Length: 295
Image (cartoon, rainbow, N blue to C red; front, side):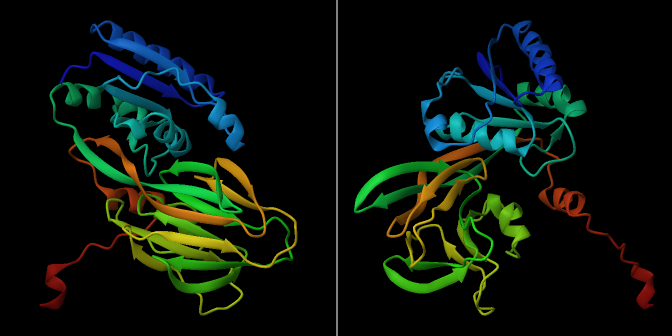
């Protein structure tokens, strides 16, 4: 499978990543492939993110991400939503999304040229914020959307509707709305379940709920989630997208979350094993079953 044009996105302000990106660019150019290099910017505000230009064109055949899962999340929002397949390469330890170690990069690219890489589709969340009935923000994420309080002592009230049916009022430090891909991110730290990343579901996980019976709930990704800010002070509550882009919410704002029309395509080698990644990242021990033990 020859690539006529490739985009290479590398970790922000990381010299080893930049050097590897240039090296990889030369490797592709020697094979007659057009190459576009782009450094992943350090995101923080929604306004900054929306103003950023896209250097890599939507027409590229492949995007290679050099960095970690955070770099891939940014790349997914920036270019992957256009249907461009992404190959994630981790420059440090094994990642849930950037699962290819650097020393395996070029052998994996040879597998790609042979057409033996597998493509895996991941769902995205789309979120819009309504203020006094008017849409003021719309954004897409691969991992999660989080509503979080700013002050240490104050609990926020979040009225949650699923498909226009009232679910509950979460009184908590915040609420995580996660895709299956994002189940191993903030959701996991907050006590939410691990889901296989291609499952067609969303997870709602309260952060430090005031009521102990408030538990994570898994819903189908066909659902539309409406969240209204309850009675809080005029102080802002933060809405974050993939933990990288922030936006302030105020009393009366309504957050609407649903499955995006666009999906992300991740490339992986045939020997890929999600369960192996879990064992490695979460340091799960393994026990070899002895068939003779019961004899």
